[in-house]
Image (cartoon, rainbow, N blue to C red; front, side, top):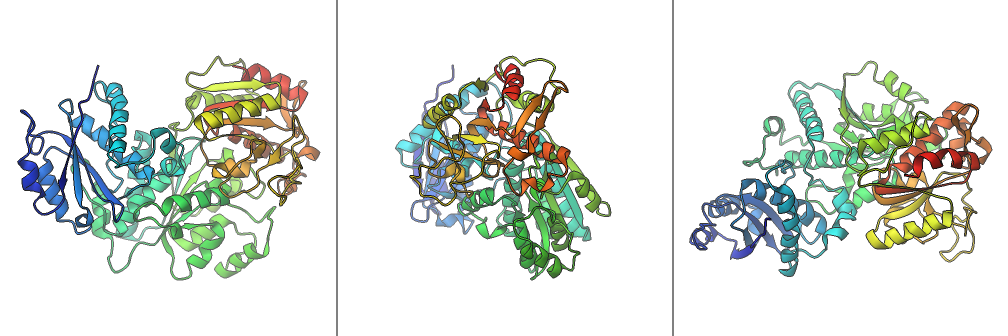
Length: 571
C-alpha cells in the first residue's frame, strides 16, 4: 500500500532561488538537485501561477527566472516525497495542472502540451494519494475548491489542460502536420473529425485552440516532456509580422456562452475568439481566417426552417454567394483552413445541413477525414452508446444486462423519476430532467413563481426558463430542458421523458412518430417528409440518452412505446 509523506517547502522566487534550493537537503535525499519533485510558483497579487516537475529543482528555477513572464511570480513551493519517481511526478503534475486551472484561484502560465497520460506500477494507489495532496494544498491556501465541485464545473469540463487519449493525440498530430503544410506551401485544407457522442470533440477543439494560440503568441514552451516536431515547425513558420488569425465557431447559443465564460479564465484565450456562424462573414471582412475551428458542425444550418431569414440572406449577399448557400459555405469562403468536429447522428433540426449536402459541398475541396472513436463521457462506454442506438433504431435483439459503473433505470411514474433526479442533483450535482419537444412552451416569459405548467403529466413541469447556459442556471425542481439546452453538455445523471410524439408500431416492429404531437414549430418544417422528421426525433432522443456520465433514467408517455422500451431500459 502506497502512503505519501508529502513535504511542501517554499522559497522566495528570485535570482537567488537556485542557490537556496540546491543548499536544501532532507536526510539522505538531495531534493533540490537530484530527486523528482513537483513545484508550484505563484503570485497572489496577479493571481498567476505555473506548475511543473523536474529532477533538478534548483536549475529549473533558474531557467524559469530567465522568462520575463515568470518573473512576475513571487514564491515557489516544492512538493517532495521519498516514494516519488519520474512516472509519479509526471502524473501528479498533470493532475495539478488540470485541477488548479479549473479551481480558478490562479490563471496558469502553463501551456497545455505534453501532459502525461500513461500507466505505471501502482498508479491507482498513487492517484488515490493525490487527493490527500490536494487537501494539503487547500490547507496552505494554494487552492480553494474541493475535487467534486471542480469536476462539476464548466471550467474543468472544457479546460484546455487535458491529458489526451491516444486517439485524440493522433487527431492533434494530424492537424498540426496539415497546418505545417498550409504555412509552408499555402495549401488550403478542410479537416473533418468524425466522432460520436461523448468522444470529446469539444474538449479536443478547446485543447487545440489553446495550443495554437500559444504558438501564435510565441508563448509556447518546449520542455523535456514535449514531443512536438510539428509544433517546432509551426513556430519556425509563423510570421511575427502576420499573426495567425484563428476563430472558434460554435453554432449552439447555450454552449457558445458557456465556452465564452471558460475562455475568459484561460491565459491566451479570449471570448472574442468564439463566434456564431452568422458572425463569421463580418469578422472575415478585415481578412480571411487562417483557420476556423467549428464545434458541433452538424448543427450548421441550411436555408430551411429558420426563425429569421433576412440576416441569413444578408450574409450570402455579403459573400457573393447564392441564396441557397449554407453556413458551411460561409466558413469555407471566410477561411483558408477549416477544422470541423462532426457527428451526423446528432443532427436534430430540419435547418441542420444534411450529411449528403455536406459531402456535395466538399466535392471540390482538399479534404481529410479523421475518425475519433474513444468514448470519454459515459461510464457505460461504447457498449452503452451502441445499445441505445440499437434500441431506438429497433435493431436490438436482446436486453442488455446491468452496465458496469452506469445506472440505466426505467420509471413507471414521471414524478418518481423527477424526484430521483432532484435527489441526485442535490447529492452529486449536474443532474436534470429533459424531454422531447412534445408540449408547447406556454410558460415562456412568465415570472419564476408562475403556476403555469407546460408539460402536463404527473405534477406538471415547466420548460427551461432560459436557453443560455441553462445547465448552470438556478433551475427549479420542476423545470425540464429541451434538446437545445443540453446538446454538447455533460451531465452526471439525465432523466429523459419520451413524450407523446413518439410511439411504437408492434406490427412493423419499428419506432414511429406522431407528427401532430411534435410541437417544435421549426422542426415541423419537414412535416411533408415523414422519414426525415422521424430521423430527427430519434436523433433527439439518442442525444438526450447519452448526456449522462453516470446514468440515465427513463419515463415514457406512450403506452406502446413504454412496453417496448421497458424490456430494454429496465436493467
